[in-house]
Image (cartoon, rainbow, N blue to C red; front, side):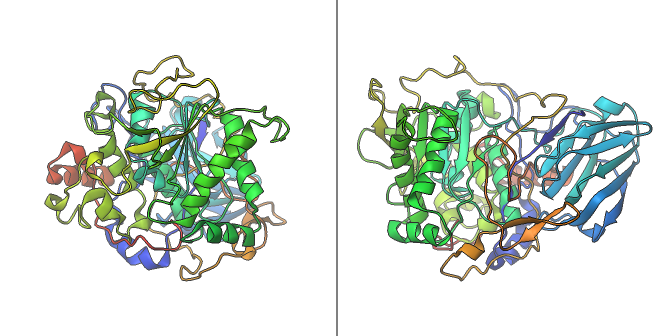
Length: 554
């Protein structure tokens, strides 16, 4: 089997934001800015492979042009046995594929040699030269069909920054961050992911309480943001639908209308605790930060799940009972800590601060640039068109819903309280036994990463059809997933339930996703913008935005 990697889950552009996003998309970090390894300087990988010109001949596809339009919200539908013939102008080093739905195992061949790729996730990198040597031709065959979003071909050299190579979800997590929506992890938890994952070297797992159903673009944004923040383990995503509410009761009511009870929500979260055995769990404000009911439900569920997870009488996919040592709630007033290190420049991050990295990571969520959160995060709605207007360069400047303030809501028996009150990992020994900055992980095994949870990355403007954002309710019919056709290709359907398997295997009944890729042009634009901004602390902040806190979901 050829070495390949598969990626994570993608998200959907809301109709109201398409125009604004289209104007600014070229300036966004569309494809996973790679946080430098310890001691490394920010910038492209020396000797990195470059994207090369290649012709793509698609056979067995109904709409082949959609695999070449550069949009992550569109895809060409290939029937069983569909092929893509690649003719490159130089020797092929890597082939990078983006899917709308994971195709399952497929083969790549060159001449008389062939090998199998995993096809588990929406973005997959095939280490072509490693298997076939010098060759300008490749044939990709999909025995079960494929929804193909894009194919990118790179020459030989080091793996480019823009091609994300993910590790499987953690076996054991030092920190489990429960984000309600894709982008919350960079806002109310700003600086935490780059600080603990890269600077401190902790095993950090991110899980999302809701999913943006069939929102392909947002799935990509999610992976892009995580990769930018320095996270290297695939996130886990529920199948619970995103829906706007402004109180806890309404949030639970909308989940119930979609077919999910409180017990369903609690069991899913408790199973995460048992599976990852996190030493620290981080959750949203009990009041939902600015009052989002799903944020409230996420934290309320997380607290109840801690009790369920430790109860041996509860059977959750065979995982043994587990008592979470420490559970922190954002803004909780008791045993409160104020995080240190978030505003300190670090060699592990190329000399910038963890908060600055989170600022860049948030900019990967372009579909969400229509709320006042841009002002909350940067102090301006125009961080690009008017860089001097950026006034927030430190997390400590944010007073409302400060990302630095958390309360130790719950401690397991025998776990001492915090004394220094500035670190989630106080009184915790990392599972790795270490704690220093870590280098970026290796590209994975020859056979890929095996059974993993889906995630996503790479973002471009999409013309994908999305649900009406003015609707006030979400019903069971809004929770959609794929249907299997006679040809074996999964196609969108509005009746099949969407589920994500939290047990480490590929998803069933819905899309799985993967990382995105970048290009030289985007890197040059980002570099130019950063220079114009005149501040290393604002690396890559590059997008005018239009936001409004009160919107349907997040």
